[in-house]
Image (cartoon, rainbow, N blue to C red):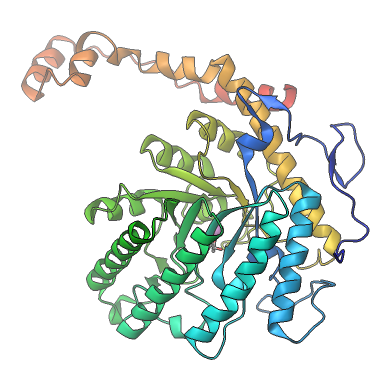
Length: 439
Ligand code: XUL
Ligand code: CO
């Protein structure tokens, strides 16, 4: 088998004192943290679209990426080379999972039938390579946004023929995900949103989106696809208003249309910050509602208002993310998918390794800090104490539904001298810093 990353050895864990940039400093896959190994906790995944089809182009310039396998003009040969390179990459990195859109892995043909045939051919190569390795599919999805036919959206397009085409595409992508043993199937809204309400029937578009999801649920049952369905919220980009704005919005939508028992969320860090939330907020809100499914691991830039999809290196954020994930009892069928791209100027193949190593180390370190913090119960105990008034007296009566406004008025009239205690934010932030710096 041809080696695409000839000079790159299998990446090993060398520990925090290592100066080798091609080694893990914190990610030690077999190290046990609590009841699981790091590999089991973190379930890292490579995103095919950024790592193997990303070119480095931006609105001001063309692609910059040097990719030794991109040396043929035959689209199917190129697709096969990318897949082979991807498996070599995952193996060398010890990356257990990958994720893809249908159009990342195989080129479109002149007709839908031809496109499906191309996809089948690449899927059978992927299947063969999966059998020869331990690499698994975390999730599959359909690209319902790149082709100009999706200019007005897919399931929310004003054009019913586009709705039908999108349905056919998702049907096929679900079949392929099942064929490859995918553990989840993701719906990211693509162009499901609007640019102006002057031309938009939002009510019909949202009803149609729900119809589309119900069809997907029905079809999964029909073919026996038992993977977890995930919706990936994002507030804007490409449209100015994306319908799947954030976890709370998606949850309201799912509940309105009777879809909530079929879906969890795939939470992306940069989408959270675009929505004006922290990554932790989105994970936390999903967790307390039982819908924390999977994570697209990346980070944005505080000074830029778009989806920069940078590799996650901020330990503070990865720590708080892992804190939520541990409190969720893990990600179950989900994982940490690096929906992240190397910067346009990081164009050499080795940069793909440096970038993933950086992200894997940042989450491994975050895991260890979060585990220690959780084990100490320092934050948990503080929070429990802060709400202790609900465990006795009138607070207990409120929680147990024993009182209403009339009883509370009587209570308040008799107890109008209220004493509050400090929230101690700064003290708690110092505790968090101590764990980050000292674990
Ligand atoms: C776009 C994005 C997508 C989804 C999959 O912002 O995050 O790549 O993760 O469609
Ligand atoms: Co994503």
